[in-house]
Image (cartoon, rainbow, N blue to C red; front, side, top):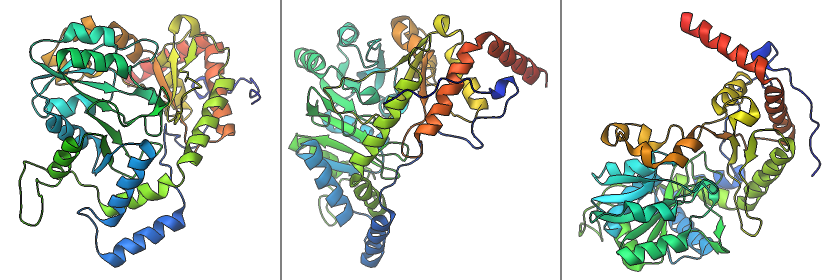
Length: 409
């Protein structure tokens, strides 16, 4: 693919017009064939079977299990509830080691159940939990590890598995970013005791709202199936503590429709990623997160690390510039779970053990992608970034003036 023209954009922060007339989000929902979706919705309405393990949910579970090569897929109302249920199902309690460089729901799913999240640092290259740091955090109260397959990159599951076996710990993976991805040629979904996927609307594969748990352990799958439906094992027969974690039929219909377009969504994301790579090539101070070409990736996120000394701008300043252009770049995962409440009050010194996490939360920026974004739009975004860095001195002065004016009213 040829690189886009390296032209300077008229920056809005310096008095130009915004690059986009309306807000461009990091991820607008992907949607497959609308006619097929509406046909499924009409079937649901005709059946009057809207929830409680309907045929669409059952079909979606079968197809996902087949795609990922796992024995069991249990569809859920969302990934947060799925995490809460699966931690109980595998027997986690007391303390669980988890990265702070993740969406806060990963930690909340533990704290909500009065399980203490023990925050672990990440590998600066992969951004996933660092196995070398895990073992240092294990105490007699440690019951498990939750790894996060960040940006679709699988954790070092081999090293984590060895640590878990040595210390007799349970292992769950938060695979919210990793649907359709592989680790060492194996589809993510069958690692650890169980894995949790998010199918939220912003994920490249979505069910509007939803998620699932995958596992090869029939005992765990049986418990999760009970727990997502109040513990019912049949009509009027409650045999286990449970809650309401079921996926509804309409969400499953969206999922089935989108599953049929999965390869199309992934191909669009890959094209976008490659266009960004060409457009940002050689820009000082920027590093585009790269992917192993031997693996299968969904390219759900376009992740850029900003090194201020090289770029002449901080990540926050570059995000501010993009926002003035209506490009709503995101600061993932700022400021880190350990610096959010209630964790910053509970663990005020956690940052001392998380230098890589603190560094990344100040440098990582995520740019728009998905089927709603095309090459011309990406070229404009890259042009804004290039122009901002080329004119970093002027940009910093303009941003500082804006801050002063905002502070003084």
